[in-house]
Image 1 (cartoon, rainbow, N blue to C red):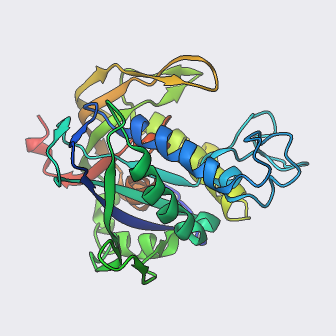
Image 2 (cartoon, one colour):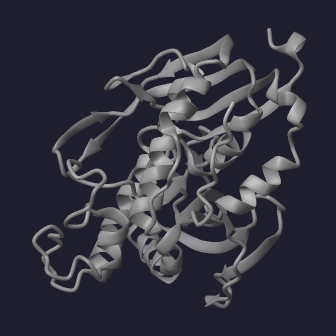
Amino acid sequence: MIAIPCPEKLSLIRYNVQLAAGPHGLVLPPYKGSTFRGGFAGTFQRLVCSTGTRQCRPCPLKTECPYALVFESEPPAGSEALRNYASIPRPFILEPPLDPKNEYAPGEPVVFSLVLFGRAAGLLPYFIVTLDEFGRRGIGQGRRPFVLDQITVTNPLTGETAVIYHQADRVVRPKDLGVTARDIWLWAAGEISQSDGAHATIRIKFLTPTRITYESRPIRTPEFHTIVRNLLRRISSLCYFHHGFAYEADFPAIIQNATRIELVANHTRWFEWERYSSRQAKKVPLGGLVGEAVYTGPVAAFWPLLRLGELLHVGKGTVFGQGKFLVERMERESAF
């Protein structure tokens, strides 16, 4: 069993954003990721577009534009990876509330998380200004307004938290509680013993629809190697396009080892939903797996990768908060 190398310079920072429903309350769909992302993106573009055309691809300023970096990123000319892709992974995640609640009374809080990767971490002021304007324009049914109440930053490993923005004084007080993949690898090393390299049992809980593809098709059974394949692809892309380095690893050997991890209990189901894409002028399917699955085998080598994956998400639609999962060790006899 080979060790999985750490993509040391991959970095992320996690914010919790608290909104307060406006005087007319809010009516939101049960799964709110697409609603947050759609309205947020449109407001961001209106605020920062220098030409006023809102057309990114032909724009000569797109390589320096914060909107293009976050929402319309493209493979740079001559790039060796993803050269056939029309776009590259976005350097952020909007994690909506997991609660399916859809009606909020005036003043009631709505909390979601914002995760920024690499260069995008320096764009927080743009996100704050956009959220403030987004609140005035409104969201959800009837486009009802809300207030950007508070933003906190949290170290996902230690739990340390600091308030960096409050509506009362509208002052930003930055505090760097971001982490790197190296931090996560070191943290994970203290959570799992080397004896687990021979045999251990883990449970993965898929908290939001997780759309993992294998051989160009969405899977309905979460075999361990398919999760690892998708995680490696996501990490490689984030490193290359948003951190400026190539993640070097023996991917075939890692995947081969992943096939040794057995799926012993599958309690997942398919959650079907779709969103309307204004760019494509059609509804786009985003259904995925929710529930939990239990795996057994030599999992120690994969533990740091899975712990990083908890923060990165996995699969399609991560910008909407899809692919959020939690991993935990468990006793073999309680797997069933």
